[in-house]
Structure formats: structure tokens, C-alpha cells
Image (cartoon, rainbow, N blue to C red; front, top):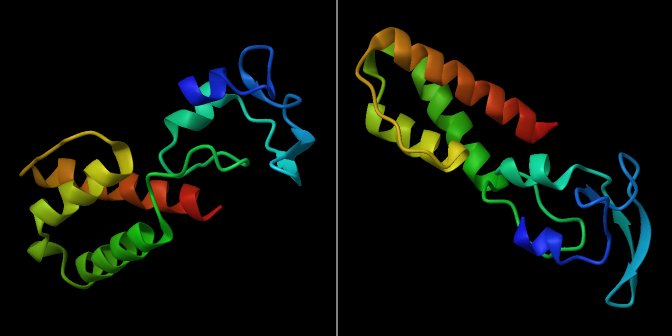
Length: 122
């Protein structure tokens, strides 16, 4: 967020360019499109990045492939869920440590992981 606060394209103290539409700007000799996002909301999402390349996503396509592969293994045999792998993925996607041996909690966390993957793929 501090990178965004020092950006000359930040408008109203919270928007990347014009609210919702962004707009075109020249950046390092190239015409670039700003996203128009609320930067506080956008920087809270670990899979987003700056349209000008000033900061990158913490979640990569490789991370998503790994999570999808893990979910595929889970779907094939839910009784053999590897909690350690699940919560390593959880930490990568949320930035928060978590662990559980409670089966309903694990199922809920798996559903949340699926939602995060869908958001990333939009």
C-alpha cells in the first residue's frame, strides 16, 4: 500500500487512476492502462498486481496449479487428506497460518481454498 500512496496516479487517496475505469497513462516511455481499483482492497488480495509493475502478486499461476493438483488428489481420496500440505497452501493463499484436525473445519477450509482459486482465475 505504501508503494501506491507514493504513486502520482493515485487519485482521491485510494484509487488507481480514475475510479473504476483507470485510464491510460505514460509510464517509463510506454502507454499503460491503470486499473481503477480501490488500492486498499486490491493490495489486500494476494493474487493481484500493479498494472504499472510496481509490485507483483504473491500468488502465481504455478501456485494455483499446485493447489488444483492437491485438490484433485483430495477429491480422489478425501479420507487421506494431508493437513500439512493443505495448510501450506492456505498460508500461501491467505498469508495466515492455520492448522486443524477437525474434519468439518478442514472441509470448510478446502471449500474456501476452492473459492480463492476461482477468484484468481477470473
